[in-house]
Length: 50
Image (cartoon, rainbow, N blue to C red; front, side):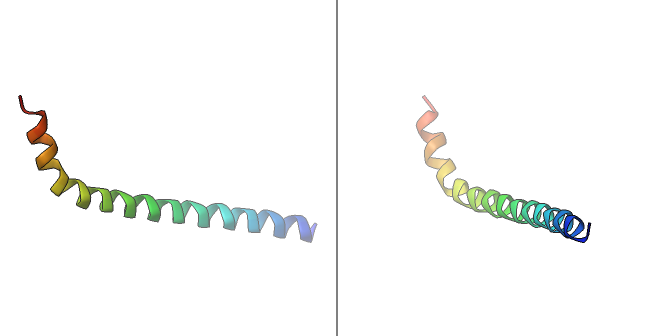
């Protein structure tokens, strides 16, 4: 039973760690893409204007 409990505990820890890492990564990627899209938005919008 102790092994099963530790297995469940480590699985829960892995799930929590993965969720935290995923949120940090997505937040970092969103901030990075926002910074990249700001200078790129002007030429792209200029191209789309007829």
